[in-house]
Amino acid sequence: MKKAAIIILILGIGIQFIPVPKNQTEKVSEADFLQTMEATIPIQNMIKASCYDCHSNNTNYPWYGRVRPFAWLLQQHIDEGKDELNFSTFQEYSGRMQREKIRSMISQISDGEMPLKEYLWMHPEAEMTKEEKEQLIEYLEKLNPQ
Amino acid sequence: MKTTLLTIGLALTIISCNNSKTEKRAAETTNETTAKAENTAASDQEGGKAITPIIDAYLAVKNALVNDNQEEAAKSGATLATALASLDISQFDVDKQTELQEIVEVAKNHGEHISKSEIEHQREHFEAMSQDIKDLTAIVGTDRTLYHQYCPMYNDNKGGMWLSTSEEIKNPLFGAKMMKCGKVQEIISL
Image 1 (cartoon, rainbow over the protein chains, first blue to last red):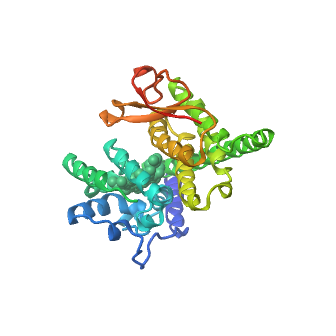
Image 2 (cartoon, rainbow over the protein chains, first blue to last red; image 1 turned 120 degrees about the vertical axis):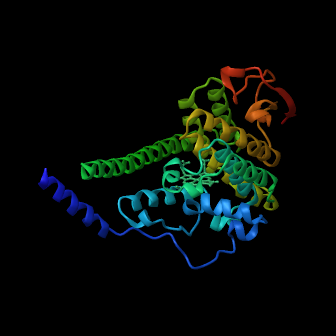
Image 3 (cartoon, chains in turn cyan, orange; image 1 turned 45 degrees about the vertical axis):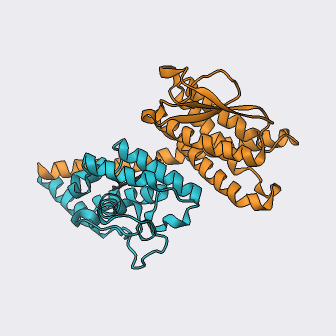
């Protein structure tokens, strides 16, 4: 039992040395959603707090975010999340694609699928109240990029 | 005790990561096989309208959803994505090519989602895609008469549309739950 514990400890420290890329950039993108769409400060804060960690080129890493294996899990969410929707490069989508992404955001928020549940365990600040969700959806429904 | 729990957690996370990767790879290989099948089909019917394989695959998705068949819808969604990718845009008016490119890109994205999601999510992407396919026919034309049908009850009464080859209503957005919801809104003729 003691031996096992030691092996685990060594493994646990060992994996900390496996590199994980960092999803951060200094550049403020001109194609960024919040830079280009008009939104009130509360709406901006909501989108930033609840979605930007996985759907932008700038993750605000939590304390555990660099600790393996959690870092790998987060990295996987970022890779898959950005693949689906990247707020940092939103204006690079065509108008039709922007409308589709907005449709999909509304549906994900109202179905309670986004933000991901695993993420909310560690990020209570990303959780939106029913009223906040309604405000965000109302905001998104008014957008109609051409 | 704590460490054991931690290791189990560790192992689980690693396993779950690997799993989703293999799934993705499996999905990619199926895509490739359908792509090949589709290519031979396209060369067999040379001279046929460019949009034919796209409408065929779109209707296959629709029929699968009418029959509440997730698996069949997923297969046809993948076929549709490859059919869209093989559309040669250069044969159409230059001033329409950008719009065509955008329609194809968005519709292809819908096809890919349909190929790998559960049925309610498939329906959602199918509904959104129906407008894109309709816009596509407005530029490229159609090879058969299509009925634009609409059910006002879909999506919490926000409504939803689709295209069908028959005037009779068979609802792909609800399936057996509400097969008859809908009416013809427009006829898209040759």
